[in-house]
Image (cartoon, rainbow, N blue to C red):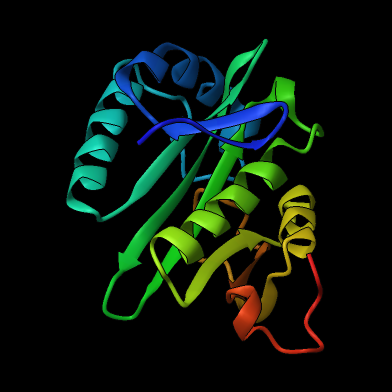
Length: 184
């Protein structure tokens, strides 16, 4: 699967072992793990093990993990489709961006590319995701991409503040969206 350009300044390619050092460096930042399921502290060797698992899942068609690559900066984050259900034709979107690259639109562009991949290549009917209500940057990304809120639930994961709320979203392909849904 070759690298694909979602925009002029970011490329997406399947995550590979060559991304491990940069993955580890960015994922080790506690600010990144604060709103993701990445462990903190990020253990040595964990990036390599995660990438090996990701490559195996991709080979089986169970999940697709892509590196976000910037022409000058290299690896800036990761965008994934997980919990892929061919029978239900759904998957869950997840993404993270290294702190030095926050606020540059990389997550929005990568997630937009991933939605195209989900709907056009994989022929999925729905993409779902959930974020912590306190993660306002991710809430903005999902709003820009036309995700619709479907559920709010208390956070039960002790890694995050138990006072925080999980917000669940869903997105259909353009042809299946409600006429009153936000237009990305």
